[in-house]
Length: 192
Image (tube, rainbow, N blue to C red; front, side, top):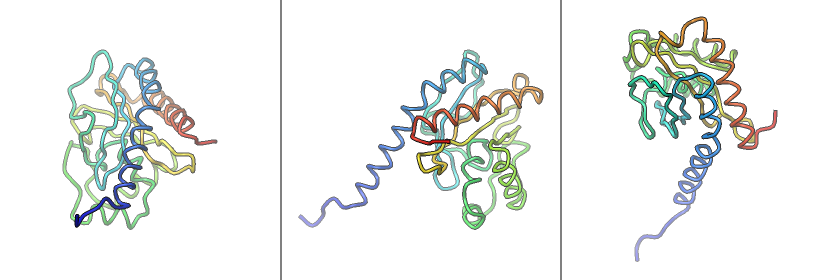
């Protein structure tokens, strides 16, 4: 009789409901994206300095990467994470990485200054590209998903090996991923 459910449980319930809605609204779009690009697609959210994969659609010839629904990966080493970090204030990003940046793939970002410059470019372009940052021989391209207020609440990304996601194809991937992000955003109530 000393404890009772409080308002924080309602907040948690709202987060879970919102997360489920994002995943539900994204699945058709992810499937079309995989059909179009023939690479694996994800929807992710930011949890502190990490991305969590909410849903994933594998392509017919997946590459074994460290991504599955519920997995946490460092946000600064993934295109989906950089898209989400790009919406934060500089002070928030500095605070997240006050103890330094994680070392992952051979091209992972090494300094907070370099990361902040990359995030500025992501904001300008509307998408992020990571090559060999999380894993060697992997390329990911990510774009934002917005809610009805225009706030970035998730990201959509596609990942594949460098042999298939070549520099010549990155613009095609970027367009397709940005279009997918806009489509999912529309489904969540965003009006352009």
